[in-house]
Amino acid sequence: MDRHYETACIINPDIGEEAIKATVQKIISLVEKHNGKDVEVDEWGRRRLAYPIQKKKEGYYVIFTYTSPGEASKELERMLKFNEDIMRFQTVKLTKRVAKEAVAEEASAEAGAESSEDKEGGENE
Image (tube, rainbow, N blue to C red; front, side, top):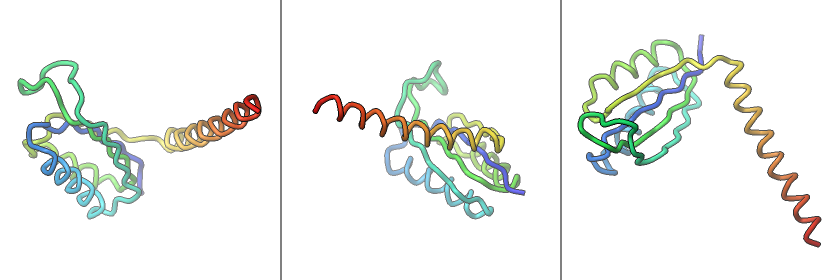
């Protein structure tokens, strides 16, 4: 049975842009290799850490949201654990309700933005 997962990773920013992109692509291909689908990548980029990790004050944040069987997330975590470029990671299982609410909130936010643009356009005329 496929479930919704979200994995947040902090990648060592000192490895360079090319290596970061290769690491992100490797994670995507690993999820897809294990029957994962709907992989969405949200790159937050270089951010200051709340506390030093491995004597570093910055990290490159990437959030992966995907649907897969349980073994895909376990294999992903195993791979992340042994990758020296990954400073920290965390995987959470999203409930169907949370995933549906997120989609509904996003749709309502887009609809709200469109209606406010219509109202502003009417006031300016």
